Image 1 (cartoon, rainbow, N blue to C red):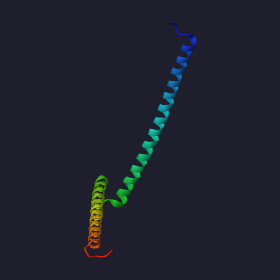
Image 2 (image 1 turned 30 degrees about the vertical axis):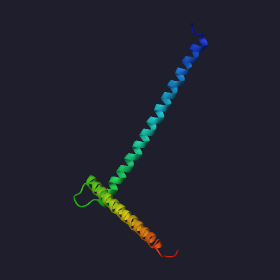
Image 3 (image 1 turned 120 degrees about the horizontal axis):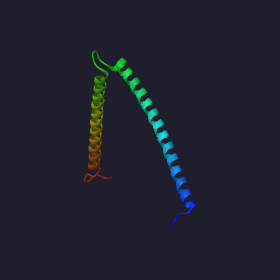
Image 4 (image 1 turned 90 degrees about the vertical axis):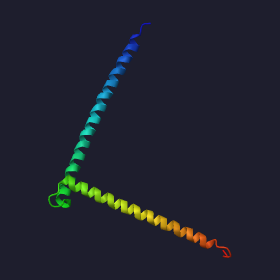
Length: 109
């Protein structure tokens, strides 16, 4: 069955519209990626300058300082987690003791 001229023209228009949308999409995504790279690159250069100026020890590279700082931060987080877990355990023990005291035989409520 032969396609009518209207159907053929409609299909060509649809292909051109899709092609146009693809081009716009590629331009927008490309622009976004360039902006993202510029922002992230700028941040990293500022971060590196700050670390170099204020946080490096004598003879230490920026990467070594960042690594040392990450290790210190991880250590502090681990200590804080241990402290929280200890507090939770103490609270649970206190609650258990309180429940035991309030449920003693002969004790009036």
